[in-house]
Image (cartoon, rainbow, N blue to C red):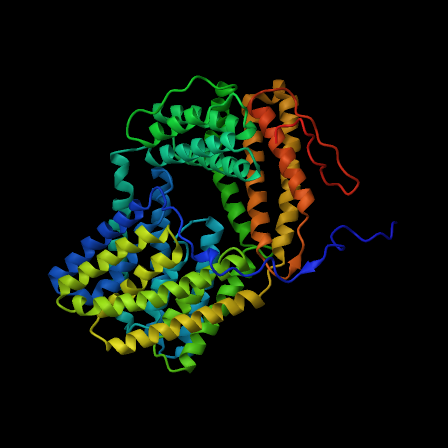
Length: 578
């Protein structure tokens, strides 16, 4: 046996991924292309119960209906068939968290117990949302509702009625978000395919690693959206053909591809007119046959069981999600207890502040800490300015809340801190529905909660290590290499595997490459871990994209990259499609 140290043991340990930025996290981005959808949805979903309670003279119940109305923020990137199921799950999850909080609040008034339950709920909600990849706004809305309910006066006999209000408002939110399917059934799929075409056009216009990864991720997202959309329709068939073009262009950046044509198709696809009908790309018939086979496999019970097993594994003992959940638990508890020790009667905002910080790694958590702190402090000033207007009457209070609900979603895609400027006054105005409070007390408590919550939350993120991030990269490297081998084998033996087997193997390789890049990006911003195998990462990604390029265009067998003595894949030859 050789006494040479293993490859893993020779990697240096590093404490910081990079210097903590100050200005970059606060820069404004371009708004999302669908920012108005959650903004309008939450306004409509909130207006119906708000105005109903206003007419009944029971605005003190707004907190319970708002819990259901806020579910309208979720699922706007999903096809309507999956959106309906996802939103139903969000509403039930919201009701479950609220029920736990209300029952706890009715049984005890101990701040120590309430903070502990709030931290536990926040960690559970964080882990569950990350596991199912629910996407923005993730666990933050669930934690906001459950934490606020913990510190609201409650009797056990009131809980069923309050939960019924939440479920009723949640049903309204479900109808608001799923209703557009009656007008434009394939809207989400069209937007996903348009993004894939635009990313492929960028890849052709500016070849490079960044555009290559972006194009692969966008194409993968488009396929997943089409797979989840249900049975094929003529429009979806046309969209599938467009994704084949985007995949071929994104995989190879072939000079014969025209980025202007891809962008023109993207604009037509995103518009309300007919979907463009492009000429058949190489392998289109086989590609569509392959996606039909995948769609059929997903409909059988075995496919659903496999999805459930994957979800359970993501929350298992070795999951990379557990350190982030542990950070959430410790940070929220620490923030709540600090505020309680300083005399804050309802320290739920400190719990929410801490819970909102936790991102995929420490560097991103630092960015969110800056954004949340700045946004909340500015938002407190906005609240102080609009408070006199909101107290002119109940209708004015309702309209102010609706306005800030819209503004928050309109601004948050530009930057999280900008959205927080609108979220903070909205959250403070909700307290006004239960009765007026001294303005100075509200402002002072919110500033204290924000500062302590941010400090405690980031401290927990810095001290609770996530060394599993590097291990996830290792596993992703192995999975990508295996998927590449399977794709090459399917291509070489395509006479026996058939077109569906080849295309399924190629899409599996795309998914593994997307996961590899995600794992590498997360690990690159994590502290207290081994240095990443950058050369091996680059080599595996290049080799995988060369295989994608060859199989996507049916160009003959890809050239296998030689392996080094350490088992890593050597960089692809210069004549390969990088």
